[in-house]
Length: 304
Image 1: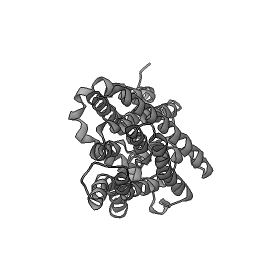
Image 2: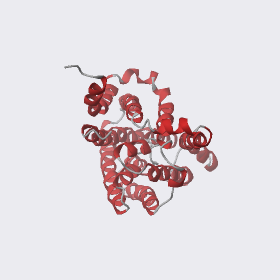
Image 3: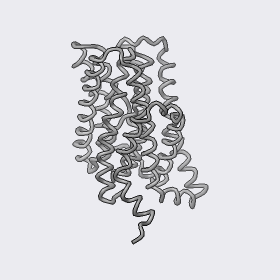
C-alpha cells in the first residue's frame, strides 16, 4: 500500500506548530540569520488572506469598539493595579494589554474559521489607536525616551501601519487589475498555515534568545512573565466572551488575545527599563502556545 504526499502532509499538519515551537527553542542561537524574513512572511500571509476578502466586508462593528475599550481601559487597569507593588512589573503587564492586535491575527482567525474581515478591520483600528495614544500614556508613565510626541507617534506608525495597509492595498489593486491572479491567490489559503509555522519557528527562537540575553533580575523577570501569562489567558477569554455576543467568538478572542509582540518589545526597550520587555517576550510563548493548541485540534479534525 503506497502512501501519497498528501497522506504524509495530513498526518504531519497537526504537529507542524508544536514542531516549529520546539525547533525555535532548540535552534534559537541561529535564528538571527532568519529574522529579516519575518516582515516578508507576514506580508505574504496577509496578502493571501486579504485576497479572500471583499472590500464591502470591511465594517466597523460594535465588537470593534468593545475590544478597543478593553485594550485601552484594561491596560490602564492592569497598570494601576500593579503599580503599588512594582512599577516595572506594572509596565510589563500594561504593555501586554495595550499592545495592538498582531498583524498576523487575521490569518490565524481565518484558519480557525472566524471572520477575517471583522478581525482585519479591528487590527487596523487597534494599531492606529496604539500609535495615537502611546506617546501620551508613555509620557505620563515616566518614559525615559527623549523623543517628542510627534516623533513617537510617527515611529510607532511607521512600524505597524505599512505592514497592514500595504498587503491590503495590493490585494485590492490585484482584484481590479488582475482578477484571475487575485482569485487564484485567494484559493490558496492553506499556504498561510505553513508560512505561519515557519514564522513561528523564527518568533519563538528569537524570543528565547532575547530572554537568555536579558536575565539581570530573575525574580522580577519571573514575576513579569507570570503577569504576562495571566493577562494573555484573560484576554483570550474576555475576547471570546465578547465575540460570542456578536456571533464570532474566534475573531473576538484573536483580536484581543493575539498581540503584536515585536512592536511591544520595541516600545518597552525604547521608552522604559529593559526588564519590562520580558512581559511581551514571554507573551510570545503564551499566545503561540494557545494558537498552536487551537490550530492543532483544528488540523487534527482535517478542517485546515
